[in-house]
Amino acid sequence: MTRVFSGIQPTGELHLGNYLGAIRNWAKMQHETDALFCVVDLHAVTVPKTPGEVGESTLRLSQLLMAAGLDPEVCTLFVQSHVREHTECAWLMECSVSFGELSRMTQFKDKSDQHKSFISAGLFTYPALQAADILLYDTEEVPVGDDQRQHVEITRDIAERFNSRYGETFVLPKAVVPKAAARVMDMQHPDKKMSKSLDSPKGTVGLLDEPKQIAKKIKSAVTDNDGEVRFDVAEKPGVSNLLSILGAATDRDPEALADEYEQYGQLKVDTADAVVALLEPFQERFRELEADPGETARLLKIGADKARETASTTVARAKAAIGFLAD
Ligand code: TRP
Image (cartoon, rainbow, N blue to C red):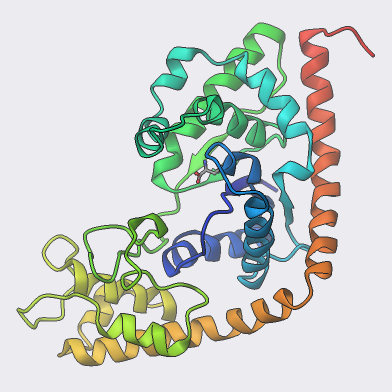
């Protein structure tokens, strides 16, 4: 089976875009591949946090992922900092990537613009840690959004360089950007991707929003005033977004759905109902997990133990390839 690895940062809450765009696909992939999913808490501290914040959001995100269907019995779901090999391997990666290569990363440029008052060295070497995440598990495929392609490319370059310096050690991974996944846009600014950083509470449908709130946000979604229901992302981003969401929630094709509607009103009502129905079982499962953090910890430990087995073998192999004096 194909070895798959992906990571997600424990920041903020998950929204409908995260779920329909990525997480739901992960839940499906876990049955078709040998998949590892990692809550990348070490990456989260590349920007300053208040004490305790990272742990809280790691617990919460882990519960959200489990509620969304990632089953610790089927995939390996774990927390990055629980497997020390990530930090150890990251150093080897830092020494296999150049300053120039890291300087070209667009995520670094964006994030260092956002956090001008303190740009940590960790923010700069972030891709080396990400390369460690991926290479530790002999990963073949990395399911990510388009914005992460560059980080998977640099991981490949690092692996190639390491292998040619020290001998075959790492498997070369490739990014897979699922095209079936819905691209969910902000309900108020349908030309922008739904995002927790957009600072648009009315435009972002949170996975834990109350059914009433969800319906309200969808019913007040920005559309246009030509009144025609048609799937056309460029000309009609708002209406197309509703069609995409309804399509993703009901497993239907958005273009075919468009033919069934005469009015925006009905489209909004049906989209809201479909999203509420989709999220109901998820929210119920989340409440159960939330009430029992001990159980979450137990499940995460199973994941970390499993991950560590592979990670420690890979680090040992890499260190042996370089030829460190054995301890
Ligand atoms: N950098 C990724 C993001 O911002 C998160 C991430 C960290 C990741 N390590 C990874 C994704 C390994 C895929 C594989 O979304």
